[in-house]
Length: 221
Image (cartoon, rainbow, N blue to C red; front, side, top):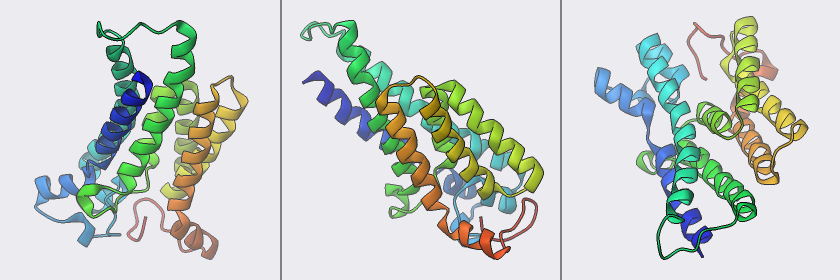
């Protein structure tokens, strides 16, 4: 029973974490604009960079990453807190090892969905790459660092954010499957990675057509 209560609460809070429209708020607070009406009309950090500059974009990027970190950390804290209540029998170690990863899996999917389908933006949003990186770093830092390294290398060579994001997602899938990780974590990364790539389907079309803009140039992201 405690698991289901913690899972429902954790999943709902994770969605709300993800749904916080960071790029949209940056536009409103810093320049009094609706960023969805400028540049590529995306609320992601790349469009913030093109529209408002590097420092607002860096803040948006960091907050989006922290949303993913926060969702995973909150679930761990919530699960532990539930079991400190006197009315709840303390779980055994095997029970925690079994159920907490599933709660993290649900929260990770919820925060990704919240970022891309924000309740505050009429269920629209970003592509969830930065938030997904936050989930990876909090869930399994070697996987998160590996994905971040691939993104940085691809961005440095090709200057294409979407390409770096998609290759980072594929890297995360390969790493989570190759390392010793719980099944729920593997399912989360596989599902989340595929979701991020699907969110980039318009970018894939432009990459194939050779029209995807590079960082520092205007255009869709």
